[in-house]
Image (tube, rainbow, N blue to C red; front, side):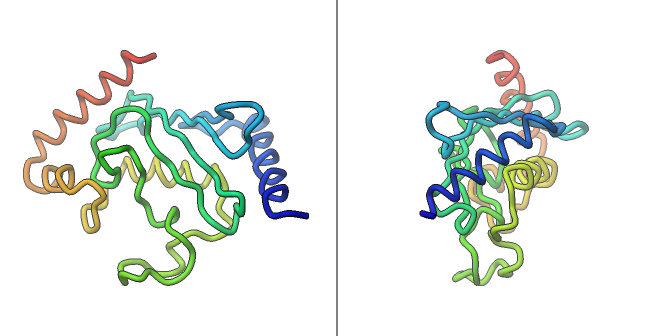
Length: 168
């Protein structure tokens, strides 16, 4: 069986499982019913965090060799966070290719492994929203503000949350 058809079957199963057993904090579905490799995800801002009350949309794009390689995740909603690039791409360890980190920042065990699912990816993103990592930021400006100007950071995030609510 070709890798892409195996990936397609696995993604169909994960989608079916999520529909049968929804997980608190997010919803997921296909962007287009004909393409199981492109998912639309809505992540609810985690309670008791700066992002509480927000509804953040993202696209999850899976490679044809999933689960051997990780998907990419990009917020389509505005996002101000140290671990989200200005263009919306999410930067967390489990979305980095498997194996040793060429930069030496991450252990191989922290990076992508085929056991990860859509659910574990989104739960990691929710955790990221709860606990920004400013050690290796994707958005240097947001990380600097998080570290040095916390009040300004909080104000920007409140605006992002408010805008996400207006988009409903």
